[in-house]
Length: 64
Image 1 (cartoon, rainbow, N blue to C red):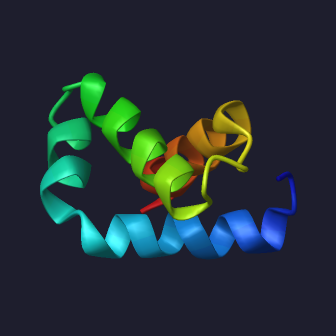
Image 2 (tube, one colour; image 1 turned 30 degrees about the horizontal axis):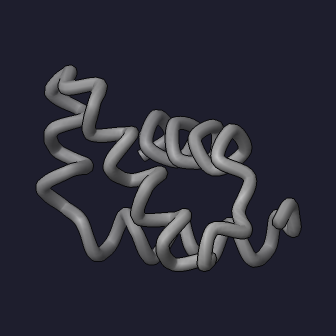
């Protein structure tokens, strides 16, 4: 899955639903991003492009 609109919705939901992982990432725990990517893969039934999801998460978190 590379549909940016669908992935954007998943990433937004993940960030809202996982404040502890978001805070861990902002505090420098790099494995938190792996957790969020894994959750995106779970929500998309394994269809999301993990590289693209990771980039979207990092972009969204750095802009907030």
